[in-house]
Image (cartoon, rainbow over all chains, first blue to last red; front, top):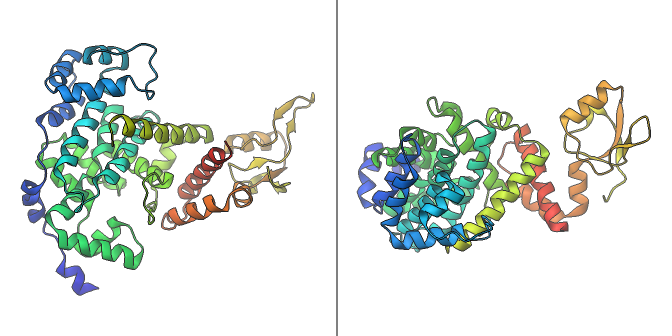
Length: 288
Length: 104
């Protein structure tokens, strides 16, 4: 196994340089992410950004008027949606729709099953948003981090297909997660790669750090609360088994994160229901 | 509930176990109905009041008699979770959720 491990070791510089082969991100994604931490971000600014993309406006209004929100009256414009649902919810919707649309149209389905990846990411975002309240963390940052936590998984199939093939083979042979196989073969993993990518894309530093440590939240110094929320949300969503994956598996759960969330029986049942129904509604309305 | 339960000392009862019979207050009123999933806080309060044992159905027993397919899938999904307390708790909570949905 050692020979194989050495053969597939991935140089961090090679990973950083491979970003040019990845699908490009629409400018609005970065604007939306930075506005989360911008205290001066306003409803007018968000409306203006979203309004420049008519397809996005149409999708947003469809989701805003869906059963997911169960509004009493019809929402007819982006500013109306922000007024009724709040800036954070509309920004999260815009992020989900834009990221999915952009990535899905550029990634070859024969190379990577982006729909499954996105279902897991959306569910993690919904779960992280709900956990953030219990774990004293910003809800919007948690949602965005959930959407992006596994973004590093895109790089292997697109930029290093032979490495990806070796990782998949290792997973089957040893019945382990991609994370374990990546550590064994590549000497890095999709979380660390995700951190490199999001730094290169100039994502907010706390978000990059949380993405990088979502499998080892104990190492996330500056972004510890967000990494903890992300770790727990990821574990719960794997446990809920929402993606049609025969080899689905829950990673080892960090006890500190679990204790910090302090989920009562009633909390957990409400959380599972919220994630599951939210995922189905959002995927239906965003045509995922 | 599919089982009559077993009498266990308070200290041996895992949170999430279901009461196999209602707990009554001294005036005869039902304080905790049969089928309640007991929490650690509830068990502590009962112990403080001098209750030493309860008739309960363990969550795992309830699962095995109710839906073996759900349990098997959960065992598979949690096979690498390490078996620490958080993973046991999460597995039980998801089992309850899945079984309730299955019944509903």
